[in-house]
Length: 257
Figure 1 (cartoon, rainbow, N blue to C red):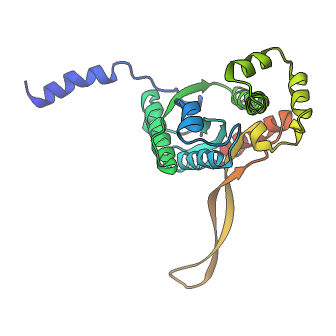
Figure 2 (figure 1 turned 90 degrees about the vertical axis):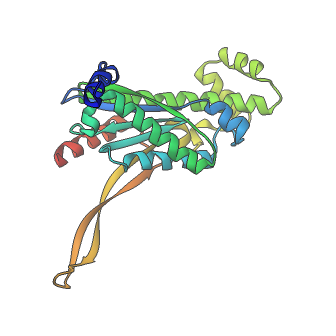
Figure 3 (figure 1 turned 180 degrees about the vertical axis):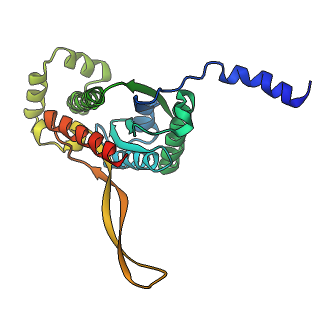
């Protein structure tokens, strides 16, 4: 069989189930670290429940993903997960879900591994969202999840450090309401409301424009140019203010388009 005929025949098995995100549909990619509990607590032994070193690795990974060719409007990270909002007009890999999932997961895994100095792996899945309000609700969902997880993590690790084993600490927290968990921490000298916002609400990464002074190479005259750079937000707005923040990002992207 000639190569061209063989190539045509075999490629069908690769592409037969290809799906593409339709035009006009928002794409949000969510990446999760694989086995990161063991990676961060046993292999590399980061401080529990939160470690600034791990936070910075995640932020740098988000920044890499936003600047490697995907037209990403907003990056968000909490715990060991990353959410990325692609521009509505983004057309990387012709919006093929297979390619977006595999390449984003590969880029994240490679970057984080290099930063960590060890092997780390992410998976990726896509949300296809038809309306702007669905995008806002998605990020509100992850933002609220970060708050819930942070409260549980602080309580869990406080009990572990007091001598309880994993089963004992988990069982103790199952019986407690949100108010009870806040009280558990307060009795141990921790006001949950006073903890850093990045622990409770996650971290955002956005593009910001700035003016830069330069020299026209043809005339030698000074000129002002507009450039973009990534800005990390450690204290994100809360509740409805966060919704307004995400809406603002969507409006800004629409205006640029």
